[in-house]
Amino acid sequence: MTAPGRPSGPSRPFRIAVLAGDGIGGEVMDAALDVLRAVGDFHFDEQFIGAAAIDKTGVPLPEATLAACRAADAVLLGAVGTGETPADPEAPRPEAGVLTLRRALGLYANLRPVRAFPALSDVCPLKPERVAGADLVVVRELTGGLYFGRRGRTADEAFDTCSYTAHEIERVSRVAFELAARRGPGARVTSIDKANVLDTSRLWRRVVEDLAAREYPHVPVAHLLVDTAAMRLVTEPAAFDVVLTENMFGDILSDQTAAVAGSLGLLPSASLPAPPDPEHGVRRALFEPVHGSAPDIAGRGLANPLGMVLSAALMLRHGLGRAAAADAVESAVDTALRRGVRPPDLGGSATTADTTRAVLTAL
Image (cartoon, rainbow, N blue to C red; front, top):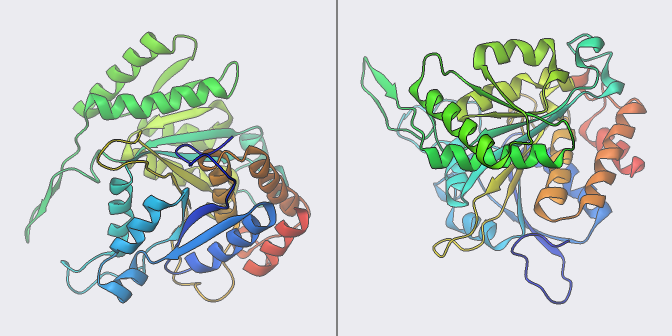
């Protein structure tokens, strides 16, 4: 199976745009590239983004980086940000590079798989009986809502506008329903909103219900208010399968689900593009760990690379059509954890290099 949009003809190495970014981004990216080299033939095109790009070019997303992403078969991103607030509020922010990249690549659906690792039951903050069997995917809308609405600020007032169209809601909902349909009999979609208060959520709920009735009557769907969902995701995570929600709710809730896995450092994500159009041509999916740039531990060899490694596995599966290689990487992570490797965020002392070696040995 070839990746969508990949030219046919003689086999060639997959071309991956590698954006290490800032903080621990470079350290965890090195681990992921080592693992990828162990399972396939790739050409890595390394480019700047975020604070590193600002330092080099004055902007968080240089044209060369965007061009490399558009020319690649997939995009792999480390982490962006410095943890500092610039003295000049109008100065370029590192995080703007990622938002601009998502918009430029037409990325509208973010997948964040979360599962309980039996080997980590002793370090998971939730009781083992709470998380047993938990295996869910958060599908987060990426291009609408508060993060992209009209905004403004004065000395004493500020506003952010939450706006959604039926088209934006339907296309991300279709991703969730298709994912549930592929996960097998009994898979269900839980749509999360705040329909008791927000008009955007009322529209969200109506569009989800209409799509379900029209195209996916065989996929069970339920609706939960976001505050109830926040509680249930940690008290009964195994009750969820595919979780569908808007941009800000998805950002917050998917980080909360780190409690199910045991650490934010274990969570991967995939951002999927809209179909190609004449203006932009083929758009590439982007894969990145959920964690941030952690500048406080950058350069110390303490970062957990497993979220980045599992993001590379998502890239193999969803971006390149290499499901067997993805299975091998995910199995190697499970094996490494079962054999006892524990980076500091999981209560141990394994360095980034130690953890990477454990995965490579399992491969």
